[in-house]
Length: 206
Image (cartoon, rainbow, N blue to C red):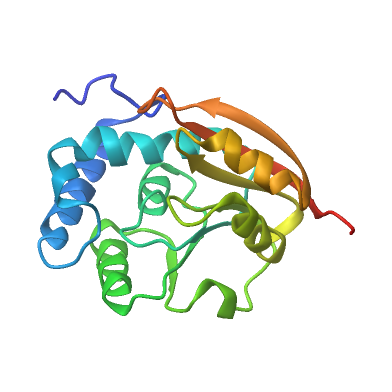
């Protein structure tokens, strides 16, 4: 694959950035042999299914964000890709309860020289708050994610949440208990999927 003028998740990246993404792919592949970071069956498609899929999340984020939190980070997707792509090296916090996965995340932080904070706690057990952007990939249903969003985000913050083919059902379920603004973005990697950009999140009064 040539690194010249390549688009990654809708973003044109430099040769150096492309090489760091390749290094990240190799690191995830290596660690997946001993820790279930991604599905082993998806390794041959790691670029499309994981790197590009994560890069498009970065593209949706508003450009003026100052800090970012990724919940249930697991194998570090999308957070590690976001950190590689962000040329401003803004801080990204990764919350992950599995100690072995945190070991991987800290290894990626060191080897790729990324501006990350890895928090080895359950999502509901941290005292973190006041983030501009929150991401969570394949973590929970939308109503639960919105509960996390009001805890972790600033009032004007933005949650970027990839969802599969049943995204509309998820939105309908969430709207019963929550009021929010949402923009749906087509996924570059799955025609049936959408990336939800959610803001102005408030619990409905009963």
